[in-house]
Image 1: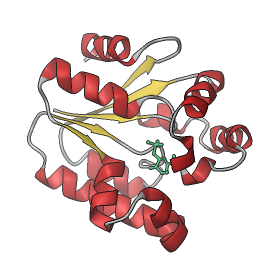
Image 2: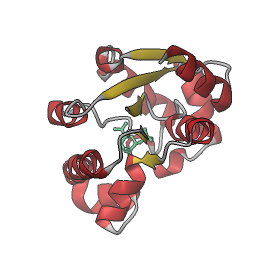
Image 3: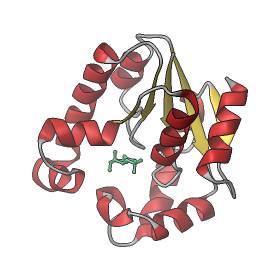
Length: 169
Ligand code: S3P
């Protein structure tokens, strides 16, 4: 099974994916890293030079390549916006997959984003709080509508979240 992690930036998709990989032995792939590999440059440079559309095109290409090449049991951390394109959701559902939404309150997201690597997230650069608020508003209902399983990450570390995911699938 392909287990795909979705959720807002800062929800912990990559950390939880690595934990799940340690627990299951399934290989873990970070879609943002695949996009960077494909482009030969980092996400910030892709947005700066090719715009969000350019990034989204690469994201679709990376997802298609991953879904074609990955073995049966595998883990994928999607980018926070990967399922905004209906085409991408179709690509993901082209093989047996479960989508896990890592749900978090705005407060938890903001705390993690301020502690972490928000500087590398083009959509949140500058006024992180204000931009996160807009993203939350524009994506209300989005993640839940794609999820087979929802797991709260509030006040939990990645290994607790990973353990709950494995209990639920
Ligand atoms: C994006 C989230 C980022 C990255 C890109 C766009 C988004 O991934 O794919 O900056 O649209 O939410 P993370 O969710 O891992 O930060």
